[in-house]
Image (cartoon, rainbow, N blue to C red; front, side, top):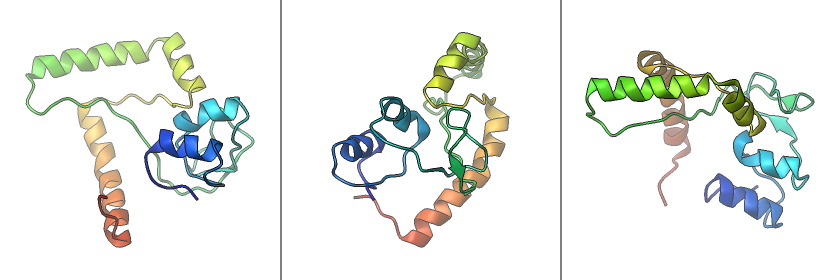
Length: 137
């Protein structure tokens, strides 16, 4: 199992025969899946993946998410303007379709909603890192 170096590096190593398996986020795996260079065996989420409805779920309830972050301390008006522009962009059907095709499920959240969402996830991942004694290399 390949497990170090970041998603793109791991995917390239998998395709290049440096290992026989890897856990990848769907957005990293999708181009290789579409080209038939790798095969998805299971989905770690509790929900079925639209792009891969035939893949089994193992239901680990460890969703992976991405968020746009800004450097701490910008004026509130700037944060509001960026959030508004992002929400407007993500509401466009053509962008949502492109993201979905790339393996990204769009679920936009505003600041307070995201803070409430991230709190239990941060604790979960913190516990995994601590109990597994994972360190920076």
